[in-house]
Length: 330
Image: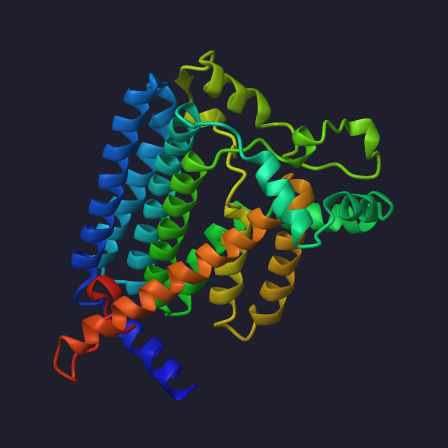
């Protein structure tokens, strides 16, 4: 506890000395992903609606300009790191969404039957779970609200970490978000699937007590990408078309971990994200193995950052203990 207080006090004292270096490295990583996305989209015969990229691009530019002001002319570490983190999350999310479309357009045979068989071999009965929530609409509604909190939690978590002085944790979260997102997209390209409702041929009237938010909304885009009828992608209408692994489950795990750092958000964050993960099989139409894979990816992303930090520390003198990517220890 004393160490955490000291770290927050140091963060308020001034801009982390490596802020610009870490910031540049994260943007270089996003640029590399953007180049990969552009190349993959070209290979898949997809084009981006340029007008749809204007709003996120201007938003990122504005946030980074403000971060520059608050890191140079008017030093405010919480503002600088938070604003830059928000810009990086927005830019990466846009690239990852487009990359998921390119991966889906070039994907091979669907893996739905394999994932369904894996669920059954593990004794996980998806239809029984659907019936439980169908008979308890209040519980299903609560889980749906948690499921829909994903993007709001991303923004609030970045702001919370920044304005409570957990600047290293903020940059770790952004990096973990990027690692988990990129891994999820790449795996989905190798192992594409529709989702459980479609695989079982279920219709809304089969479960009147449940209103899954993402059960069918992605299907037109996924089908269009695979049969070649969808060739222009708009960032204004990008859907979550990934089934395996579940990015919702991955993010729910990351949220729970980083919200745990604050006494105020510790237990509410754990409860909310336990509900988010519990909602994923129905609201997202995911197989249970999708959820498990998403959780494992999040754990691996966080573990890789920890290993990188320890290796970086081992290469330096004992007095210098930078974080991952050369991050300052605040």
